[in-house]
Length: 438
Image 1 (cartoon, helix red, strand yellow):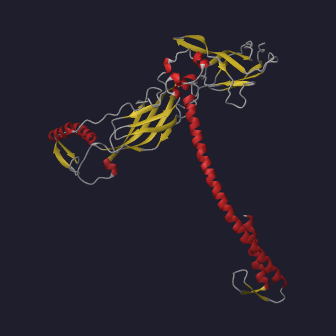
Image 2 (cartoon, rainbow, N blue to C red; image 1 turned 135 degrees about the vertical axis):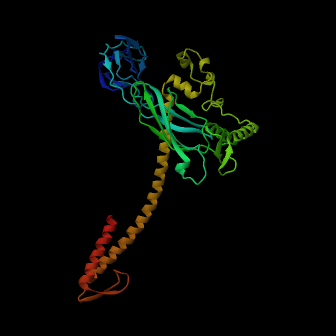
Image 3 (cartoon, one colour; image 1 turned 90 degrees about the vertical axis):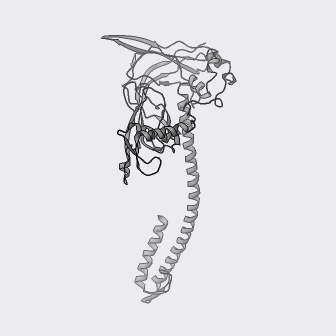
């Protein structure tokens, strides 16, 4: 028979994006082990039209709580509902369990629970440069680990361009006279996790890259930074295009340039512009970069019908195999389990970190063996020294005269008064014993 409903259900810790539920297993499990608990709940959606406010309760997908990757797979005593919205009411929270016979009845619904205020999202993850040419810098990243109870709706990218000034003149110039720093702010106006900066000048430094996430609550994350980048050397076509742009922006009938000769000279503007355009026209067309984030993915894609998920999974997706024909494995898993790609990146990053830590531990092990050999030698040498000092002190203590010869202190035979030798031997013995203790 089916089990009874769970007992003593209560709400635990409530956060901005999670609600902790606690319970105890049913008294009667139906004669079979309970192996699954299911949580059903509703989300309150508030709509405001003028001064009027309407509240609708939307049933959320049921949550099965068993996680067989964990040591204790079955959530026998509670579960935390995560990835919720901040400042939102959740109601009609009911729980049931099942054994191999059937599902048991639902528990009585809990009182409505409201999550806490929104928090700023954490910084974006894995901010990295994926393409660098003479005219293109492309970045990609992943969404924040925690969005703060509201989805991320935008990203802001800021950077500084160290640009060569358009004005050219005669005489030696300092770097501050040749270059100017231009700050840029790019509002991506969407949650896309990539951006391509195009039509850049070659051999130009771009620095102070900072990326921040903006949530639907209007809160900003902390910035994640990227090191400075320098675009590659420009092609002849790109140099000509930039020079033509500079000439067209320049006012007057004449212009100073070092473009052809390598030293500054004055040219008649229209004649110079005509020669530049003629040279540009004679150059062969360059291959234009395609989609930075697209391209041929045939090697990475696999057909859906080659994946052996079994009949149960096929039923779970309604048998719509053709919809996944052009998806990668990661995209398929993401559709099955939201957040899979982010967790996979975190897992791979953790593996990489552990591998580095293992290498460091191996090196420390080698160093420890070497240090142990050295310390063993030092302790043996110092033990011999202590024995020699103690023997010499015994000899000095029993000596009957006033002066005595000894070579223990300095390695050569010297004359001491007995009292002086005993004092020096005492200090030397304390130093030797202290070096072993240290």
